[in-house]
Length: 249
Image (cartoon, rainbow, N blue to C red):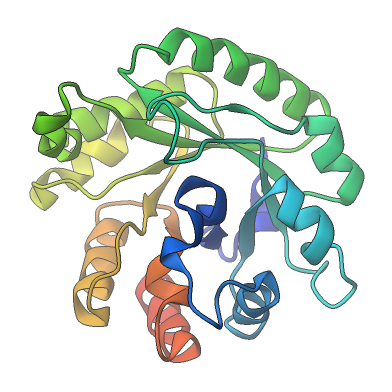
């Protein structure tokens, strides 16, 4: 499925803002609680697309000043108050298409006890999206139990498995985490065979560390970035957008 509308020169620079459901207000301040602030960053920072939960997108992205920014409508999610590894749909492909979304997104917690349920739901979403002519982004997040072994989720072979699983499931783009062994990035990205692999921005770190990670990912053959907190928690989000642009393009 063609992702040209969501990219520039074949590369994706996505501003992600689905954290309000996933994390609650913990990530927000008096600026970035407002979706309009994020959409202004996406517009002025020349991001190639923006990802939002359907409910927020339907109220804010649909305003005329933002509709030119390609939208990836996130169709599933969870709160941090419920079962950690289960994320079910809260909106449909038809609803996403009805507001003008250019793609849809879906999270899968690979390895969780709910993996089969999320695989099944993803298959229906993929079929509906492709029938509607829009691509599917898969947030491929390993979930290793017990929780004390959380670091294993960043092991290079586990991240490579996540990339490959997304490709096997028919995703057009897989969003994957940065591994603890960055020297394995070429192998990880190769395993997304036939599928674009983009880097998950993750927790807030220094601008220097963040840009270094992006450069390493792109040099290894990555197709771009999905950044959230590192962008809209920044004191200078537009300056950071310029640095990200240089690292990706």
